[in-house]
Image (cartoon, rainbow, N blue to C red; front, side):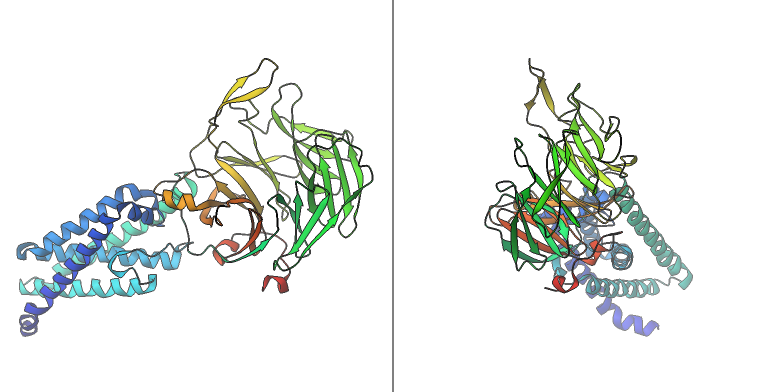
Length: 510
């Protein structure tokens, strides 16, 4: 053994040191030259995402320090131990990502930027083994016993594994539960983009039935348009009303199979018709005024209205066969500034379990309610805007007016299978401004508990940004300019869906 060590010492130990010096110098310089991008990459890490601000400079400093230790013969052994422990940490980190993380972030850059995560694991294991072999040669050359080497190498390695695992668990908890506003972007959350030109940019989503997406049109309010989920054929029909003499101002369409509904809360009136039939009958007239409406069933509705005394927004239910028909729930929307702008938001319904969601526009909160508006949960988005940042001035006539541009937090949302898809207007830590200029960020949340699931980008199509979105079991449909764009969800997204009606299988293959 001694002869073997003497023969290869002059070759293996210096070569190992030179390889590590090359690796760490290149890696450190690469990170320094594009430091902001490196911090963004760390922010997406399931292990270090919550600590990216501290670890970015720490990693670079540690790599350069190890280079110095390896450069001098007197400190070479210490440098090899440090290299070994750091490589063990990297190896354990990759193993945790591949086997226990809910998402796999983009691969790191630097000298091995072309390698995938599995190749990284093999590379790191080989380098760690090389460092360990060089350590054994040096220690045996000094006459160090086996038991002492075990204490100096194996025990610190176990401590390194424990630290890495602890960081992994704590970072995941902070990002998912702690509202720390650090986003995580998984690989290829949506893919297989396909677009259909609708001709005009005035469409909105009305619903889905029998494998077809239904659209309303603000410039043609009595036209109900449908298109198959393969985006191959569009069909439009004009609805006939049993009474079209009302002074309509804001007609909206909504599909809840087997019916479609047409309504205008300024009249107020609600019509109902069967899909496939062009005729709609009045089922509610002057029961209540409303600004938003969600169909619960053929005779039950949830709505948002303005309180006649305070002018604040309030949620309520309309039951056509109940006496009284209307019930208001004044306690649900929490006033912070004026009760109008600060409580503005979007009312949605989950078709799978029937729960209702109200997500505020100017603060990081959304309410989860039962069909009778019993409050089930108060949940939060990951940004830190707990109080609506709006400045309001009261006019002499009693009207409220914005005194300054507000901080817009949540732009538009979609809901499916107890997953909320929210287009956020706020940039998280370590995110690229250039990326924000090119895309819209969509964050995903569980509605059954306080849990952030991850984020993905919807890129602008030329000058057109995403205006609205609609989620199904397999696809996310987006309205951007005059185009209807379809994206296919990856399994990392669909695995979180709890319920929901599947799209037509044959059509979804296209």
